[in-house]
Length: 270
Image 1 (tube, rainbow, N blue to C red):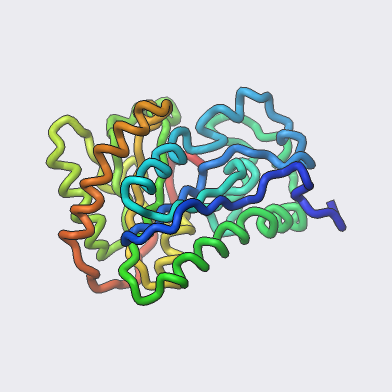
Image 2 (cartoon, rainbow, N blue to C red; image 1 turned 135 degrees about the vertical axis):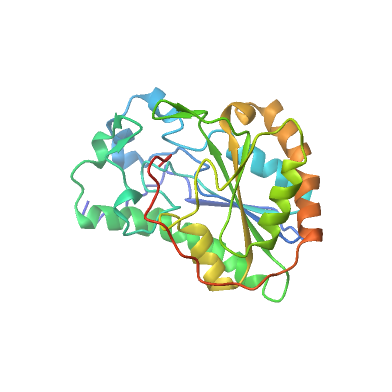
């Protein structure tokens, strides 16, 4: 692909920014989209593979948009499938472009050259994070909570995930602690503390922007069967929005320390 831009005239822009929110929240959705650049010929996958969790966070964008409206928050989302490049991984991280995801081989990702990987990072990863950075920089001096919205599959590697909602966080995250406590008071919810994932050295978005912009962060994982359809997204947003407002009201900006990252996720959605 030397001399060619990865994205052609029929491909969507890599970033969508919606709303000019005046609340503390900026909502980002790393795995919102499932577009594949035309030049990548659907990565050699059948069309139904792009409907699955391996391609995008099912329901996360719809939930994020509803939360954005309820919270008066800007929503920044990424249009391309995580199978092209995962924007919650460092651009040079080997797992940013997977050859196999949840047992599914990705033909278009096998044996990529460094130049091919760099083209994906330049066209998709860099503009997305640049847009997040610009929105956060414009809020300098205001309290800002970077809300990273994700969703997780009900089962992974043959193991059921019992949680309905998970709160992922860095150390010394007062707003995460407050949200976790509020969710645990909801008697019918199974709530994960750094479950189904623990935020660690594989994550990029939260640690990168928290370090660059001195904002607070909160990462929410919601099980995909609860938000796969519009009705579930609306119901979950109606439930989460007041808790998010209360979590911000109850928390204060705490002392920060450099996170002690783990060695990566043993099992993971890509």
